[in-house]
Length: 636
Image (cartoon, rainbow, N blue to C red; front, side, top):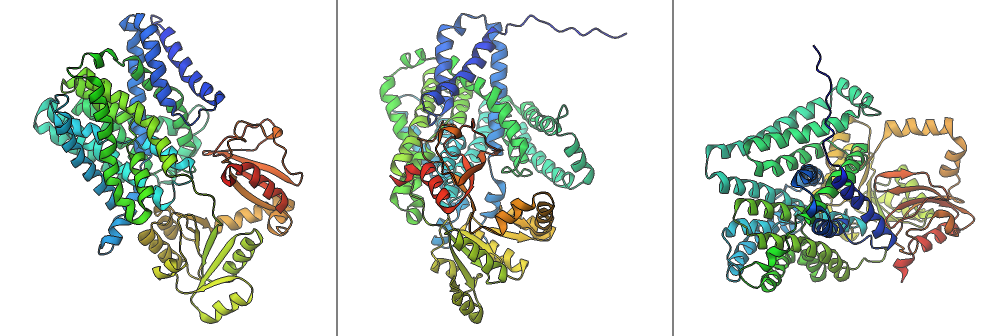
């Protein structure tokens, strides 16, 4: 006998309507008043505090329970996406492969990041004892762990907006932030478990969670190579199936449930590990799955979490503190910055005092993890309501203050002339140098054969006599993080060896190579190197000749008249305008607009925003007009 479907309608959707309306309204208002640089989550917390005090406070507790569940789900998503931001390959690649000296140690992002965290932890531990003199602290170690947290979610967008994410400096900061996130969550999980349960045998179950992580990694590594899996993944990734989204949700909830079985305080670690696991199998720069996950998480669940943080913020707890709250808040703010600024001077030798100081300020931004750690400490009774409210307030202040101070102290440098280093004076390398020269780009060919080197010079091209395997060559060429390096010798094996040397010795982010075999392709992908698939390139070229011959010949053969260029919008005056509102040069055209990972074919009603990457085509005069309009702010 079938049981009829019974859906209960005894739920109140009015509170959810208020919260979702706020989540929609806040970014709209920030855009209208041109305050996009203010972190949305900060406004969400403040708005949540207001509606919590004047609207939601009058609702029965049963109406709020569903919002609290959605908020918890949002926080699990936030931890998952934080793990997804961790570039595991970049961390593995930073493992030292040669005998260390001071120079190699300070230029290694992994070692510096680990040292940065240890120094921060020691300073945090000592500062907890100092703060205890102002306000009694029950568990100084747990208090120190709360203070040592940082926020990759704040740091990443700041570096990305300034085009510093792939620079050597940006990689140093983001690696240190990633290590701080990983070690903070691990230490916090173990500490919270011990505080709640003591040193019980179940503590080893946390290690079992890491074993399961490794087991799933090995299974996933083999599964993703199976033809049947790839076929099903492709066929079911669209329309009603959305198998990738469903599989991701299974993965997240599985790790959260396993962690919850060990202890509710371990759930954050479970969600974080699920994110790292998926990160190892995802090409995040090309993944549609990431766009869908961002849309689901940041479009619904995560805003509810931050709004509910504001709803539950107890401002009266500050006035009930035993001592003066203002003295404690001021001392806590100073300490939160000091424990990041002091280790930041590890970067001084490489980047100078100003950038080291600015990096320390940016590392001091905190958000979700400090809120979660403080809330769990409150539930355990080792953090008072007043201290918990103080940490939430500090999250708001540091998220607002740190990016602003970073931009003031480390202003964006004006764009420098691009220098492309081509390793290998083959016919392909010479042709590339010629084409770049016609585009006004400075190209230097590195050639070890003296006769070939002299021949390249005789053709009016820049050349350097030296070996691409010798790191001194790149020191002599004054290799900078924004310079592209293109290993294009006669041997793909040599190209791979040069690429490995550039990654190991310089941690250089901008390398383009080529591949015609799956083995080399695997090496290049692991090193996060852009590469050209020779077989696919040939097929694409023939396809273009068949389907769009006129366009192909225009771009390839007549480039002396019309050029194509990617320009990042950095001019605030352009932001928010439609294409039809901007008087562009008559001999130019905007053909593509990239917003994050989304690429659109523009029309007159398309809006332009800061940090959009615009692909334009036209004469050199038209391209110069595009550059002036899109980059006008950099020339001031």
